[in-house]
Length: 403
Image (cartoon, rainbow, N blue to C red; front, top):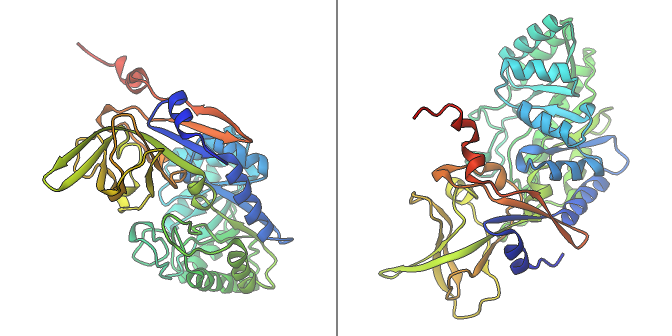
């Protein structure tokens, strides 16, 4: 879809997130078709972009939801995803979250420790329910990605090792308050190599075979998410390569395959628009100061992540510049040594690949308002979240203010 950047910036203001819903539809359809006739459920990872309109769009396409807080579970339900299509994951669930998840009767709770399992068992017994569970297995495979988004090694906080998982399944099978129906692994995000996915899947598939041999009937085989996308020049995995590797190592298993794509669905559906405030030169160092900041898009500061940045309808000789925001931190940048033409006040910069972990990680640091979000679909644009005001930010504090 052709995006009229200047018109959108004028209509909705900046900073601004814009999402191409037609692109999201295409990504979902491509992945669903790659699963072919296999029993499968695509559970969108809500944490990637939790805007209700984004979730609702995927719900209409047939997606379920992978959630990591009770708030995300409630978002999924509000957006129209049925409870039996919702998974509640996460390494630390509070008692109230477990209680609400059991009460809402979602598909399953994905457990990450023996202590958590026994807590869920106790609460299910108190409520007179049988908790449907899966256990997150840590296969100890190096995902070959950024350390902050690696989750499948013993040094990471996620999941349990194979032997512990087997003991947990045997315990759950004997429990009157637990129903072990699923198994799960997720080794990391932004995966661009098929080998660790295949190896992890094979390890977990072997565990499922051993569990079925002792009459523990695993019905759902959750391969997690993490399929990489192109930010710069990455060579990524195709949907068919991804599912082909899964089919290869799960052959003969009577299970429903679950996957949890987030970044894959939405990263390259989104762009971030920001206006130039000023240019500044310190000695030989050029800075382009913009109205967007690390509170709007933290990935470059947090991960040193790369996002392509380009000037909209501005020509001239390209020279390196650091693109920085107004936040009072030296770490407030969206790009370093970016080749840009000479820029003036109100020129627009376009930051690519910001549909995932952009707005959803935004904050009000420096009492800055979170930006608006806009959807593009079938040639039309519409607001899906208005820009915050100062009153929005202080609403939960004013009633307690003592002067």
